Amino acid sequence: MAKRKKRLRVKEGKDSSRFMIYLMIAAMLFSGFYMLRWWGPEEESRSLPSMETYDVRQMGNASILISVRDIETEIVAEINTPISFETIRDIQNTSLDGLKRITLEVGNPVFYESAIEGRTYLLFRFTFDELDDNRTNSVRNILNSKLGTNNYELLRGCMGSLPINISGPGTDRVYFPCGFDTEKDDYFRIFLLKKTKDGLFEGTIGFVEKKIEVGPVIDADVVNITNILAQGVIESDFYPDRLYRINTSDMEILPPRVLINKTVKDEVLEKIDSLPGVDVRAEDNKTIISFNSSHENISRILEIENISYNLETGYLALTLPENASLSFINYTLNEARISNITFEKTGSVSLPEEVIIDGKLVTIPNNDRFNALLKIDTEIGDRVNISLSTLRYGDQIFIMGAGEI
Image: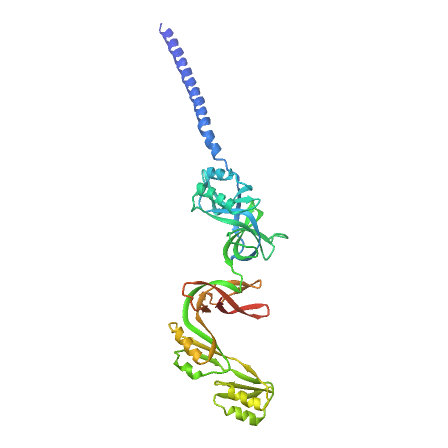
């Protein structure tokens, strides 16, 4: 009897074991279905959208000079924040009139679970058959809706000429994002980056450090006003005694002159030299008579002697305090028989460190406080057009002065 009960217990144990095995198999099957159902779409969402990624590094230790060769029919969005794969796909699925392609290019990418960031750069390049304001605004509206207004900068695509070939013939061109005001033959300093993929050279890309203005006329900021400069022409009659009423820190006078293209007899010279305010000298078979009064008495003597002559005007320059009364100065100079009176301010302007003159890069000394002549109504803080005066010595060009135009 006891043995029979034992066999029954064994049979019951086997049935219980089978039940547990079936339960585990069912659980595994259900779990697998659950994982396929819920993890499948997530794995799919982790697949990368279309993009070009590169390892990049700067070539050289400093920026290089380039000139713009071509301006592409391309709008470039430089992204300054990580961007999700979903947003990338939304932007890449954009359909616009005349749009040929949208390229995402990333330099030194950093990948997250569902996003990417460019450690060096991240660019969307929208290439059109041609560009106009409507298409530019359409791209801007799309980016505003997907990225917000503060997470990107909108630029153009430019092609520049390098001074040398980077890696063989035809590699003297570099692509770089540029401003919408860029024109062909503009000059820039750019940081040049070398692109590689799996250790192989894939080209270059540049990023603007600064634009180099083309002179001799460039923009400048007025940083200081020092004095007023009054200038005028001295013609046939001149009365310098009137000028002593003017408060001036410096006065430069070049008197008018009578020029005779031959030597004159001593007795004639003695008559002229005896006149008040007259200085006579002979040099190189010429006679030069300077005067600071009326030239009528000089003319009378020369006409009696039947001597022909030419009259050369003189020049006056006065340096005045900045608060000088221009109406009083103008009245006094007219009394002294000064004509063609002009007033300018002297001061200093802030100029760029470098400028292009006749295709050459020229460094401007003391560019942050460069002395300049300014218009009389110019004030500190104004942005003005400045014309640079230059001196050439062989192949070298030196900046010597500046004046507002």
